[in-house]
Amino acid sequence: MYIGIVADDLTGAADAAAPFAKRGLQAGVGIALPGKPTFRMEACDALAYDTETREMPPENSVKITRLTRAATRRFLEFGPVLLYKKIDSTLRGHLRLELDAMRRELPGRLAVVCPAFPANGRTVVRGVLHIHGVPWTETDFAPSRSLDSDMPTVRAAFAGAQDIAVAEMGLDTLRQGVQAAEALWQRMMAQGIHTVFCDAVTQADLEILAQAILRQPQRYLPVGSAGFSAALAAWLPDPPSPAAPATEKAEDVFATGRVLVAVGSRHPISRRQAMYLAERAGILPVLLHKLTEAEEAAAQIRAQWEAGQRVVLLITPASDVPNGSALFQAAALSLHKQCARHGKKPVEALITTGGETAIQFCHAFGGMGLYISGETQPGVVRGYLHSAEKGSAAFQGLPIITKAGGFGTEETLARCVGLV
Image (cartoon, rainbow, N blue to C red):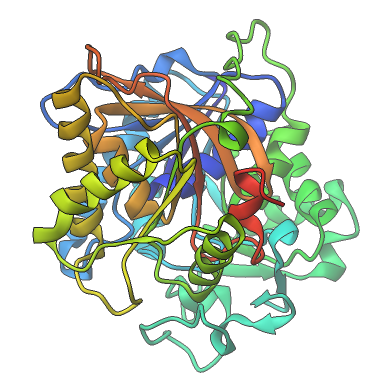
């Protein structure tokens, strides 16, 4: 294995692995399924493992730490050239807790943190995350939790404002080049610094960080979003004998086949994308209000396909509907059961928005993981399901697109199904 990525949700795991697929490497996402075979982590050159800890409450800190440490140890068994901690580009999740958990398995490494993802408008200037030029605390992505400082910095989001073992590196220093960055990090480590928070505005900035890390990858723990991952992929040397890359499964099926688009993200961007898709396709969404409607929703999905409708949109009717994850889990399980009962799977491709939505459909369809084949747009990842199930309704090889809730423009979902 060339790189191991520890992520806290499925969409994040997928978009972090996608740049390595674009390099021609075998890239995948591992999913833990209780009571079923585990994803073969050694089968990939680049593998992201989803701990599914993003939405866990803070009081589950012991479990979050245990899962993160276990994933790190599992990766170390395969001796990867590099380990990477994938975080959300808008700083959601248990940032410091999971970083500390990985660091306990990787003593002595300097954590190099930068959540920038310039291709999707995320930049870091003077320690503050900006989204399309606006400080993140002034956007829809503002944190619900309080920071440990009055300054809305990335460092404060990691509870590092008062930590004397934490430092920062601004653009002026970064743009002096790879050697200057590495020299600074060596001095920091000699002084007992364990984490450095870095600015980055362009992909070239991230590539300076990546090149410095790859000079001595065993000394560092890079921490960031898919932007940082892409920079590492760009500069990672070719492995001596890469595994065969994922072959494309019916690349045009999203534009020609029967597609289920499941929008579970509550972010306003995803909601606008869903409504634009419905208008562009001339369809009525299948609305899911409560758990008791799951069977009916699955029947509506099948009925729309049988009536000749190519694209079906499944969505909760409002952003404030509780238990959205459970709703989509129930709908996915009902659809699977109905497909098995009728001896066929009418869905030919799946698009999910939001990590919780993606994982619920993967679980319901018997997925052990995803093989990643590339991106359709920045942060919009294409691949196919690796399933444990057999039989006529099995979903092995189902083409799938995953997308985080806050990514993309109004046209993103419509573009995925060939309507733009």
